[in-house]
Image 1: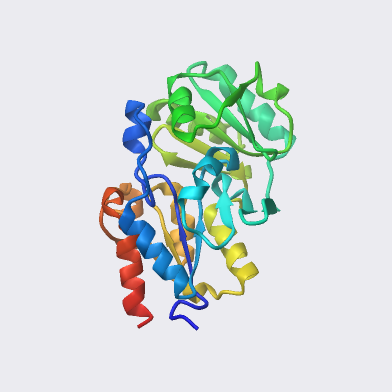
Image 2: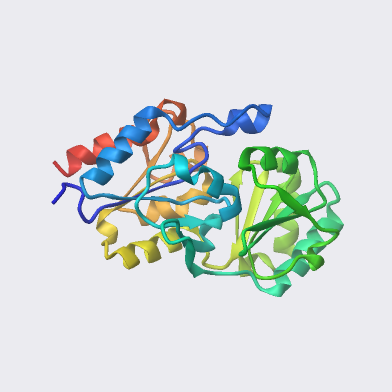
Length: 281
């Protein structure tokens, strides 16, 4: 028996567990996992805790990094569109976009020629339409090769997520366009970072899937803790018994009630485990 038996800790990957923003912007290699985080997670799991990743990345964009992360629970991928069991190599749950999402996404591309989109297929393939520099930067950091398509209508179903990529003012216009068409209410539309606008089916968010994961593991939400740095993490931060955020988090995360710990570059996960270690002493 360990002190963390019946406890689930879930963390966002980029800029929470591992700081990747510099690599995204500069094209330099992604850094290794901070040793503080590695040691803290190994201790947490050795004491019976379950650790899960909850990332906005598609499986194809995270799987190359999975071996660097100590984890002993299935993870949430595609911003809440799926739960994936890394040990078994299979999806446990999925929540996919319907065909109309492709048509509406293509309407966005037709109206905004400077916007790129990545379409995340369940079969571990990322299709891209109307590529731009941000799209290529994202490809560098995920190390997931893009399959280019002439139109979203040529991308096969099922899709877990559409990711619109452009500078933030343009994406604000995209969000306003989707809202003006009456489509926004059919989806989860959230910024995972200023230049990335995520689109998943209604209810497919990190918070909802963390609840499903906890239920699968037989863990009460009273003993679920989550960490994240961006607006797409807020649904799980507020669903948890306590949400945590690194000091580099977005202003919206600071105002959601999350406990702020050190910067992700300094090993934020280790700070969180230290707090839990006192809570479950």
